[in-house]
Length: 265
Image (cartoon, rainbow, N blue to C red; front, side):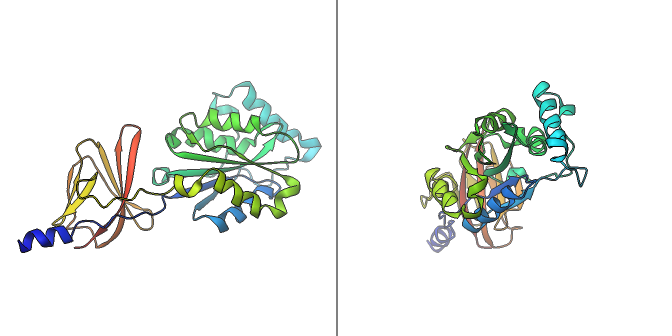
């Protein structure tokens, strides 16, 4: 009986937390940079700023001749990697993020070319992730940028609507962003479901994680978002895992669920 009670006490405490969010943006005039800086004060997220491979390029010279030429090259051959300008920005841990918010300037009715390069490279890895889109432009509509995003991330789960912030609104964008986050139901979209049912998707008894057979893959992340384990095993020994709070991601094809877990060794 004592062993049974101890085992039940050791069951994971599973509560609601936020999944990880990544903000990816490009900014030439710094309008998008200002927008992202404000967004970062409202949500917990990591940030990547896309940078061209060649520094100091003047996209505005000669009536934006260079920027126009880059967009034209992509339009003519959007499936050709050589159509996209080189960038120096890379990422190796996209699988750690469940939500990606893209901050995009508008160039000639399209997404800025360097940002298109990043999404052309990494967009396929964003399949089944929540995708938010923020677009900055002087006055032009953003449908072309939305089309670019959906072309480059064809299997993304886009949160609607996209947010359009005009250049004249940049300095006072805080309320606009706050209202947009509410409109797309950001907190609900990025939360990890509550459960305290010992017969749920995952449970922890006597130092062992037990995962329901319907899940094919198990990933375990520490509180900093670093992946410490990935396996197809359904019974996992935790004796070598330090005590602490973790997030378990259970996957089956395109479906996944996440749980906050408290390991006590």
